Amino acid sequence: MKKGITRRDEDFSRWYTDVIAGARLADYAPVKGCMVIRPNGYALWERMQSCLDRMFKETGHENAYFPLLIPESFLHKEAEHVEGFAPECAVVTHGGGKQLEERLVIRPTSETIIWAMYKKWIMSYRDLPILINQWCNVLRWELRTRLFLRTTEFLWQEGHTAHASAGEAEEETLRILDIYRTFAEDYSAIPVVPGRKSEREKFAGAVHTYTIEALMQDGKALQAGTSHFLGQNFAKAFDVTFQNRQGEQELVWATSWGMSTRMIGALIMTHGDDQGLILPPRLAPTAVVFIPIFKGQTGHAEVLQYVAQLAASLGKEIPHRVDAREEYTPGWKFNEWERAGVPIRVEVGPRDVQRGEAVLVRRDTGEKITVSEEGLKDRVAELLDDIQRSLYERAGRFREEHSHVVDDYEVFKELIADEGGFVRSFWCGAGVCEDQIKQETMATIRCIPLEDGGEEGRCVRCNKKAHGRVYFAKAY
RNA sequence: CGGGACGUAGCGCAGUCUGGCUAGCGCACCUGAAUGGGGUUCAGGGGGUCGGUGGUUCAAAUCCACUCGUCCCGACCA
Image 1 (cartoon, rainbow, N blue to C red):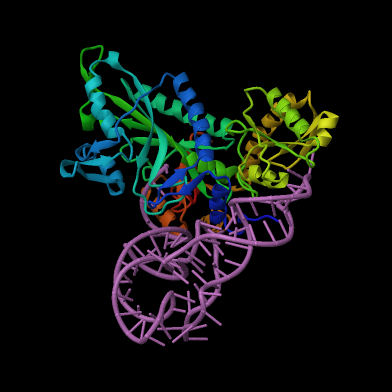
Image 2 (cartoon, helix red, strand yellow; image 1 turned 60 degrees about the vertical axis):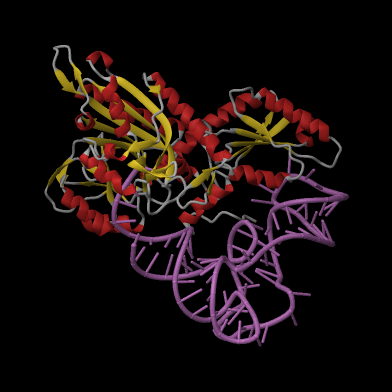
């Protein structure tokens, strides 16, 4: 009966790519590691964009656009940054048929070019803060790629802010982290752990990095968004100073933060089931699809007209569409829209026309609900809320069931090796321990949670004194 | 970049070991008809430089060499 999508318990990786193909979100491009984001995938990205964009603007940020090409020398100005990014940069060596005098890097991220510009724009404390975001593509030459999760080129937003004090910049970093958390939990219905990255895992060039970490259905963690406190690193590298109220020159404080199309991967792996994609209603480009059902030619027009009437009654706030294609049978369409993750399907046949009803079907549970024409809009709105909430709760339960508090290293190793998930253990804070744990178990520190409970204990590996538990997991 | 697998129609594969008729199957696609509340059925049809190059041979999808590419598993990463 079911074809096309590999079951999750059979092969999770294949399931993931099958879901993407089945929902027509993306396809492989001719260049290795690159993908084409197809209309269904792009519509989803646009929903994410508009939602995040609104939140950025509500907190005072403005959009701008910086160029794709960066002089190679810029990248070399910040030591840690270049070390982190140089290996994965694509470099343009020729233009106009000639070798370039200075090679140009295709941006892997835009800190360097942005700070080169900020130097020109910042003179005094009156020029601060600068709160700029840009929506763009970036390129990172990854060895191992996967659709949405890690592609050579990807779309994202990157925010870059400049501040007069460390405190203000730090505050900004956390404000954005909270926007990411809100976006993940309230819109994407993905529960996340907000926290700080370890020294080893932080962004190259940051003083420290905050992250939101989600748990996927295969027990692996996914970093879903990061917000960096850059200190004065880039101000130093690009010599960006401002005159303060006292007339003294000071280095500017910086933040940067980003969320990418990887979030689509997170959505797929958090909510999807063996039938395919499941979209949270608040992000679904189409929240409701109407499928007219015909019985021969008689009553054809009546069904169509009734469906149009029902669809119109939903109004503009609920994105919906009518699939009146004649060439496909209802069952075929049910399946197609299911794979595409549309939260609610409305089946409308001659029987419903007669009774003044419609049949609603929830994507998340498959439950069928008969409603009257008058009650449709309210019921749909209510159902969408309910689906949104129940997806979040379901994901939350999964995370709880796959999170373990562990103090014994043998248990730690077994858990990571067998069922995966989050393992919450004490860690002494030493990079050596972190590295060894990674080598021995493949697990990394996903984050040091913002809410650590203040517990005192002993490092799960070296037994030295440790403060607060951290989250370990195998990760994407 | 290391280990493994694989390139035959849009997709998934058989055929390759043991060279030999017109290169085949499923899905998808096209035409027609009947269907239509969970992937509808029947009939007919189109589509291939067998990844590429070179070699062996009367004869190559099949054997040999080289080459390009993809996927999976590891080290690196949003």
